[in-house]
Length: 138
Image (cartoon, rainbow, N blue to C red):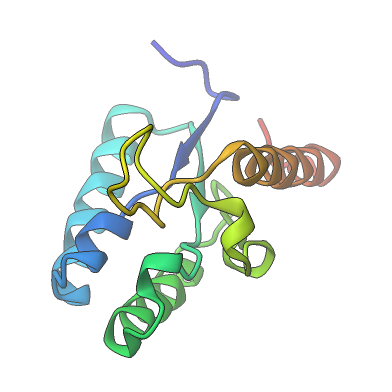
């Protein structure tokens, strides 16, 4: 069982949007997941990660628009128990993503590489410090 002060990080929706799942469907599924967390773990702090413009979206304006719409939706969920981290503001280069899956030559352009994860960890740490200083972590 998670303690109240343990944050849960949700970095979801990217693959659905990249597969052209309608934004409305992704939002509904996300809301259902949030309701489940709030019901089962009412005191937990949720940290939602805004999706970056994945390199795989290059030249695909519809996917970029879907990600933008989903990120706007995530912003509306911020409250005393829910933070939103704007990873999308930091990852504006392909340098933060794997270009290929593992050792294969199959293109990736979605998953974070080591530098991308370091950036995510830094941003999460900053958000947790900010919440702690504001007294929002308990």
